[in-house]
Amino acid sequence: MRRLAVSDTTGVAAMKLNTWEAGVVAEEEKRSDFVCWIRNPSKASWALCIPYEIDGETKPAYPDFIVVREDKALGYVIDILESHNPDFKDNLGKAKGFAEYAKQNPGVGRIQLIRQSKDAAGKERFKRLDMYRTAIRDKVLHAVNNDELDHIFDTDRFFE
Image (cartoon, rainbow, N blue to C red; front, side, top):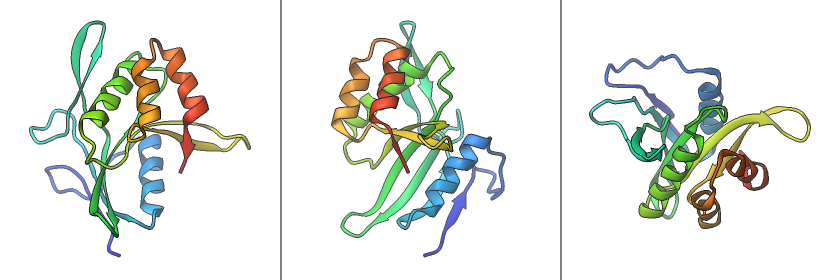
């Protein structure tokens, strides 16, 4: 299978990714169903924007990556991936925005929030919450603070 990496409107194949982003892309490229990925540029006219609320104000979230996978039954599947630092104030708002987006768009594949942390063996890994899963989505939508979101990541996350 041919693997592609598409960057932004400049057409430049090499781009700067932070450590987390590069690690997430590397994990995705190892998947047997992986086709390609695109960096979702913040504020570009064609970028995917998911609204979220923080402090009573609606703001735009631009997920880091759009990944294309090939499914034998469905054909191409589009995933939305956001690697996000848990120390940022907007974590719960973005998580709820992604959960609501997943609820309203059942035709999208994986919609994941991704954090980097150590697994049980002490190895740095990416833990993921998949908003495609109704149980996860419902927990996130009912969370009232970042501590509850952290708990959901601790109990319901998975590693790729």
